Image (cartoon, rainbow, N blue to C red; front, side, top):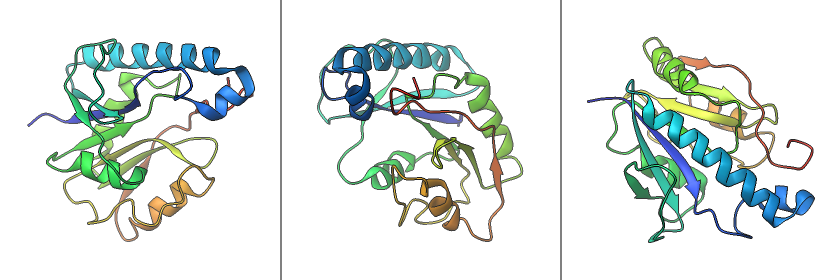
Amino acid sequence: MRDTVIVFARAPRLGTVKRRLARDVGDRKALRFYRGNLARLLRELARDRRFRTVLAATPDHVRMRWPVRVPVVEQGGGDLGTRMHRACAGHRRVAIVGTDIPALRADDVAAAFRALGRAQAAFGPSEDGGYWLVALSPRRPARPFAGVRWSTAFALADTLANFAGRRVALLRVLRDVDTGADL
């Protein structure tokens, strides 16, 4: 079975995406950034044959044309950790990425899967204390995302605590775009 990268995405609709960014730059500019980065990322990942690309969409039951034809699954309910845990189910080696990292490339995803050759998990740290990628091997904890304070400077540290005693690889640090200053 081929490695799978899952792109977590919200349906690109005015006023529903990149809300913190929109407070600084306006809804239209935030939507334009989001659509452009989502399309670029999906095109690049879907072209790469080293792994399979899947889109995990929210809200559930959304009917729309995504910028690239890839399998689409629903994220379902719950907090981000619950949705990520659900998305990983059924995949031996899996990576999850978001849509707000302009510097993210297919080679970064491939590097995460290579790291799983010697580690049970790989993380792509972001400058704000979170992470832009998590890759998991089959030997992952039962609850890898339990107790994480999402959207805070503690997200990576909280998640790493769930991997205590396990081998973890850290990838390069990238910047995510959450505010106008980040853009």
